[in-house]
Length: 120
Image 1 (cartoon, rainbow, N blue to C red):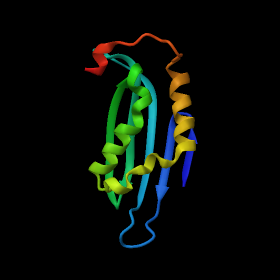
Image 2 (image 1 turned 135 degrees about the vertical axis):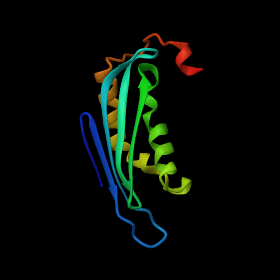
Image 3 (image 1 turned 90 degrees about the vertical axis):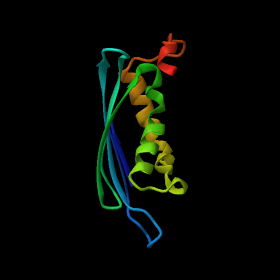
Image 4 (image 1 turned 180 degrees about the horizontal axis):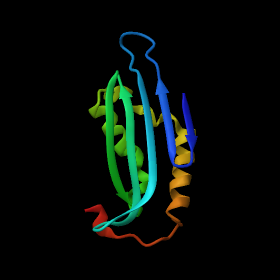
């Protein structure tokens, strides 16, 4: 199950057998500013994976905010979702809605200039 509303994505899955994985993940995000990286998006991932509580916050500068799924996947794997099952990003419809909301909130447009230092 997945539910999206601007600023928030909720993904929940119940294990179907002993080899399956359960998770209940909330991903909140808001426009923020970092003294070194400038305007961007602050993400807070919280909830539980396999009954283990998690709360992780990460900031992505405007140029990298589109790549939030990479960070979400890394955090999910860190908390116990096996790489073979870490496709919580497979909720494409909901991630697409979130992606569009991030774009709108950061006022991102095709052709915007980027700071190459953010990619080093």
